[in-house]
Amino acid sequence: MPAHTLLLYCRAGFEGEAAAEIQDRAAALGHAGFVKAKPGSAYLSLHLYQACAEELVRRIELRSLVFARQLLVAGELVRELPVDDRVSPLLAAAAALGGPYSDVYVETADTNEAKALAAFTRPFGRAFEAGARRARLLGGGAQAPRLHLFCLSSAAVWPALSWPGRRSEWPLGIPRLKFPARAPSRSTLKLDEALQVFLSPAEQAEYLRPGMAAVDLGAAPGGWTWQLVRRGLRVAAIDNGPMDDELLASGLVEHRREDGFRYRPPQPVDWLVCDMVEQPGRIARLVAQWLARGDCRRAIFNLKLPMKKRYAEVQRCRELIATELGARAHRLDLRQLYHDREEVTGYLR
Image (cartoon, rainbow, N blue to C red):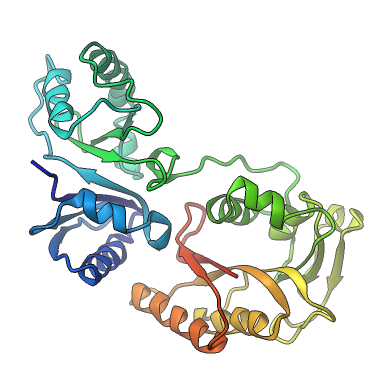
C-alpha cells in the first residue's frame, strides 16, 4: 500500500511554521491532509487524506521549503517494540515500504531530550544494519531510496524513506560545521552553511572566485567578511563598529564606517551579504533594491523574525522583494538554517 504520511524535521519551536508551510504547499498541488505537531518536538507529520506521499515529495523540492530540514515519506509508526528483539519488527516494516535501500540512517529529533537516546541508537543502528544486510534490504545502489529510522523512544520508531536529489544528505538535515579558530565571531558559520546549502560545489567554484568584489553590510567584527576573504574575494565592510585586525591586515578588506542603509558601491559588485539586526521587511526591501538597481548580482541575507506570525512575515518579505524587483527576472530561496536562530536566510539572484 502507498504511504500517505510526510515526515518533516525542523528547528524546535518552529513546528507551527513548518506545518503551515507544508499544508499550504500540499493544498496548492491539490492535496489535503491534517498535521500532527507537538510544540518543541523538532518534527511534524502531514497525513494526507488521499494522495500518495511519494508523489507529493516528487513535486515539492526540499530547498523550496523554508522551515523543513528534511522531507521524508513515512510508513506506519512501529510502537511497543519488544526489549528482547527490536530489530525484527522494524525489518518487517522496512520490507513493507520497499527496498533494497542504499543505506540506513538511525536518527532522533534535534532536542536535548531526544539526544539522550544516543546510548540506544548507536548499538541498535549497528544491530539493525547487520540484520538488514542479512535480509537483503541494503545494497540497492546510489539511486535507491535511503531508509530512515526516526526514533521517538527505544520502543517507538518511525520508518521513512528519502530519495537522492530530493533530500538533505546530512543526517537530520544538519551540517556539522567546525568553528574556524581564526574567525572573528560565530556568526561566520551562518554564511558558511548558507553557501553550502544554496550553492553546489560547481556554483561555489564559479561564483566565488578570487578577485571578485563583495559588500558586507553590518560587517563588524567580520564573521561574514571572513568567509569571503578566505575564498579570495575583495570586501567592502560597511559598519560603524570595529573590524577584526587580522582581517584588515589581509589587504582584501576596506572598512567603511557608514550606515548600511545609505551606502552604495561606486560600481556593481558580485556579492552583497547582510546580517544586520533590523526589521525583516526593511532588510528585504534593501536587498531587493540593490539587485533592482544593478548594484550587485547575488545576495545572501538574514531576516530576523518577530516572535509571532513568523510564517506570515516570511511570506510578506517575499512579496516585498517581488514588488521591488517588478518585472526583473530573479530567483529567491529562503531557508531556516541550522546556525540560524529566530531568523531565516535568503539567497537572491
